[in-house]
Image (cartoon, rainbow, N blue to C red; front, side):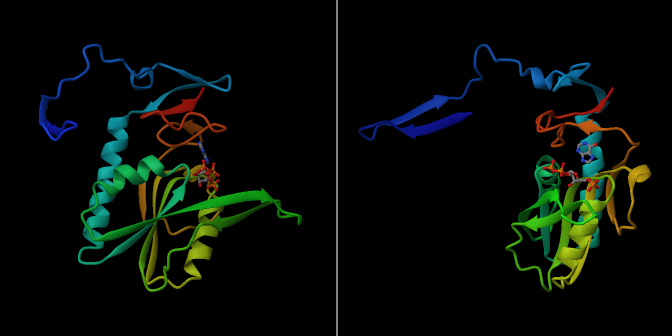
Length: 208
Ligand SMILES: O=P(O)(O)OC[C@H]1O[C@H](OP(=O)(O)OP(=O)(O)O)[C@H](O)[C@@H]1O
């Protein structure tokens, strides 16, 4: 690839891009047959290619369902960052993107954990909103998100989740777009973590 740049003094410098002579292999990209995080072992479960295929199907359905409409994607950090980045590259609609976080803390009442939405500065009233989530497990997080965002009167509110664990679900949720339904295994990679680690793997691994 030809690249042009100006050297100090204004002379035009032209160079041909060449890959480094000794590219360093990225060990994270070498599909290890197992990974170890915090001394817990994980084995390969879903390849990046399988994830891409599932994400493309979800994107195609969204493009079709919302044709001619403008969409606000609400990305739930942290886990959804890879899913959202890859999905949004396949979205051909006019759309906006905003990011929220869910804070969890122990409540003082017997209900135990309390969850709260942080960072929802975007006006969603009257908008067609789609929540992007990496995983719906028990469904507690999604229940709270749907209740909180739904109370702000969007024109419509749907969910796109990359993973669903149907065996774990404890709420009836309107989950319109599901990438992959998976058994009750703890998974890491592609944005999902085990105690902070593992989000950077391009494939998904499950606990051994
Ligand atoms: O259905 P549930 O049982 O509520 O679990 C799903 C939630 O758990 C994970 O988030 P986590 O709180 O681990 O935060 P993270 O996205 O920063 O990893 C995931 O991203 C979902 O938000």
